[in-house]
Image 1: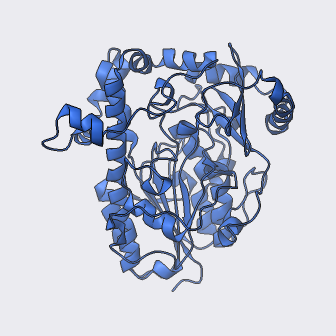
Image 2 (image 1 turned 180 degrees about the vertical axis):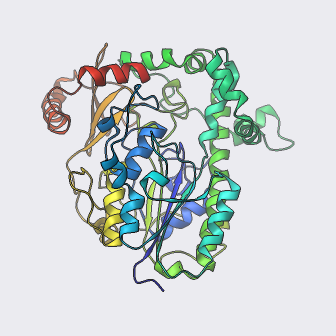
Length: 466
């Protein structure tokens, strides 16, 4: 058996923090994710580096903010390149230097680079059931070297096609549908209602209700409205969808999450049945969330928790449950739930993987290993604030507040009180009782991003790609 532990990194796409039954969501059933939560540490205050696919994945595999390459959305400015120095210190290369076989299966969506560029061998290009089977094959094999295996699943990302398909008009939207036949077919399956159930019974007993923060935020930043205007299907959904249609969106989102949970169950069963269960770390997270009808929005890109806050579960070696337990019908709550520590999967996971593998991480990274928090989950909060970049501005998250500064427009400065206002429905920046907190968070923001938070190029990038 290799002398260093193996690492299995499971990544979903567009899954927000509450889309697990172990997180208390009774409208979704995720036994495989619950299975990990029961045996590991679930970080309840975890955020991505940027809540959209390509920027988030850049951070996950480099440990850097995507703004280092001028990236705030999936759209890159012409001529943008990823420096070789960043690629050469990508996660796969770091693990290879430690003697690991590095295997990557599933969705990549990395900006101006591939999994091979950052040190991985491509195991599978499939992003669904075949990916689960290919990973299962690897996990059942005896190996002479430790492995770092990435299982990058596409769902519940297929939910993106619902709003696009409902009102596609321009060439871009029609092109997405033309090339998204598998995605649309999977979405149709997710929209299927239980057999023999009337409309009245479906909405009364089965379909998730509207969220408590269904209506737009008071003092909503102009940047969010600009973002919606740039994606016409989002504007049409916000203005034209009925409440029943929004609830159907939530129903389908839950079904797509359950679909990827079954695929994860296949991978976890193979690990439990194979020779590596007692020597493998399992890390599960998502690249970003989905607005899930909050503030009459779907898709991602915003600073709201539904978009930026993600699931993160870490299981040390020997903590994996036996095969088959992912089929349990009862939701499981983690006995080691960590609610105190602010964690960034994009900034902190690469240093964590280096810590596990005994590798020195690259210099200059903002994140740090969360392995000590897994070893001692009851430890005190380890950072005062967490910086996050979004498609509408930059954000500081603290234990109680979020402070957001957009590059322009009305209501560009936001202070959200997550205790008094957990659903993020009003801007508290003008409240007299919060003046001291506003000043404190302004200073932290300046410390993290600089007093000139947005250069002209960055402002252009955000406004262009919001």
